[in-house]
Image (cartoon, rainbow, N blue to C red; front, top):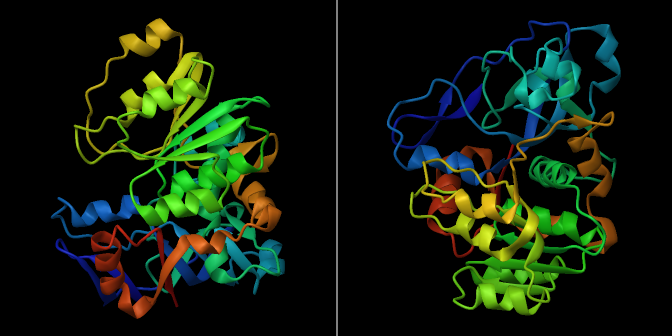
Length: 345
């Protein structure tokens, strides 16, 4: 099958073997849409070791084959796929038995990600999409599930004030989730105009530049001098000079909670004494899990496009899968235009 694989310099479209079903609960999915995640761009900035398998984890597709009659009822169904947690989890270690698939102690060996024509994952990682959802919408379920997990871990209270640092895909998905809740005020920071415009569309009460020198003062003025009850950091870092963690601490009230959703790819300098003295909680939501019997993907599917908000507006470009090299370059080089880029098979 065709797959986009990193050759040590860039993504190249090559032929690799089609993945095989080996376990009873294995499912073969024909990929129809795959989103390029900002975290995947790391391979273009500093990595030199060639890969043998494709990466990619935001996808939707059609179930083509199953390995047990138990799952025959989902053949032909449109699905979103949890590729990194439930889809690879052993289902028998202590974490899995508690629904915490992200922390599985015996995950399956890597069999390749979504930059390909086909992917295999375990059945419990496949979630049937609503009939009215198209494949591009289905590929947005994964980043929305990240936001679902964040709020399920942060446990906001009605009337809280919230700030979301960053207006990339995850920041905007967190904003979409927040708009479904009873926050008093939602403040969002963004870098580019198109991101800030999208934040306004998704329901932010206030949208500020990420480097606004009056950010702290603005937040204090709008929260009776306290700071926000919650802050969600969604930027992460490829540089040790990143300041968003420090910003989150200073913006959040004493005793408040800070959710760190952005991926920090390098060590950063951070003064832990400040949140320690402030009695603040640093919370690290990651990926998605099963909580109270329901997976974050299920909730994301249920909440998709609520309140007449069209989340597909986050998709700023769609490329054919055969154009994956151009799609990656576009995503990396057109940051002033891009929110989410999708590949369609």
